[in-house]
Image 1 (cartoon, rainbow over the protein chains, first blue to last red):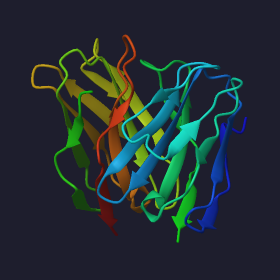
Image 2: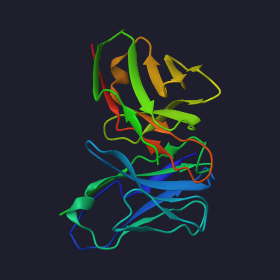
Image 3: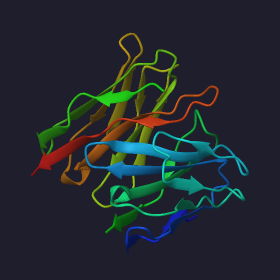
Image 4: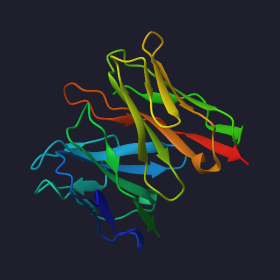
Length: 113
Length: 113
């Protein structure tokens, strides 16, 4: 079982460009999440999805969008990247949105120049 | 949502010593907590969890203690090894409603040989 797969592993992106970070899980988890991790700020929730077809905003949603067309995939899109979006992005999933263990991918390192 | 905090940003110990990492939470209704280990360049990995109907839970070389009276939990690592060097997070992944998991900022554990 692979768990959670994120792609790309790392990317350097020019400001203003559009970028989609991919996330796939094979655990049939209902809930999925996107976090960004910045030094000194810990993990901050960007968007989440309780189940396929639904999404919700987290703590820092501005500049990001997500979709959940099916159970396995939860892509994160930066419509027009800005340098402040330079960060490490972690996709995560759990069986349900609350009261369940959350599993993380290995991260996508994004640098916006 | 309620925040989860860690008391110390860095903990240095000698190999073979026991380590204790602390975490405070503010929501008295919180009922499920998770400890994660994050090594440099990797995603957070599940270590151990505890639900509010327990005060203590033990794993391999790790013990989590939960004190609901003062809203505090701790992670104890026995016979700390250099491979334990990492950042440790506590997470409040409580059940109920649309409660979204939140994470502390992390404590960096440094183990000196």
